[in-house]
Amino acid sequence: MGNSALKAHIETAQKTGVFQLTDKGLVEFPEDLQRLSANLRTINLSSNKIDVLPPWMGKFGVLKSLSMNNNRLGKLPDELCRLKKLETLHLSANQISRLPADFGQLSALKTLNLSGNQLRAMPPELCSLRHLDVVDLSKNKIQSISDEVAGVQAIEINLNQNQISLISAQVSRCPRLKVLRLEENCLELSMLPHCILSDSQISLLAVEGNLFEIKMLRDLEGFDKYMERFTATRKKFV
Image (cartoon, rainbow, N blue to C red; front, side):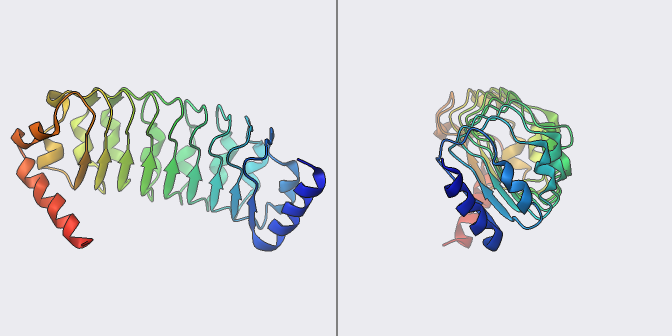
């Protein structure tokens, strides 16, 4: 991509607070963006070939949305965790295997998409995100859900297309969890904690494509309670 075209995008972003440059074959985060660190609210560099986020990412003090889907990121810089206004972070289809230790400092984060990465466990750092609404961890390599899940504040957790065969009963204690997606995993019916049905707030449990037939859920203890929540939620949107 030519310098003049990049310059034009940067001039526009200076006026609008939005920088969008997708599918242009970029191999690095544009250095000239540093000049806009005080006024950029949205950055979208999805579908490029960027493998590193620069440490000066931490300077974007008013940034609310960062989209880096479909790049080549292997890890995230610690400085990213300084983005106190960041509400939306899209990082699907990269090569991320873990999150920075201070990831929980992204105190305004509401939406996190880590679909299609290299995660082997649910990141414990998610438990520190008090305003997280939706987290997408689908298409990773997660094999189990540990007790730490109880601290996740999300309303929706998407774990579709992983390798999950074990789920902690603590998932029923997630304080705000309404939607749990577990489609196309390695779950046997005996590994699904009954308390998800009987003693949680979950009103949509998606488990198609596991090692049991969906109709077998009806025989589990607590299924009637789950159906009450499911039906009540559906009525709200009709």
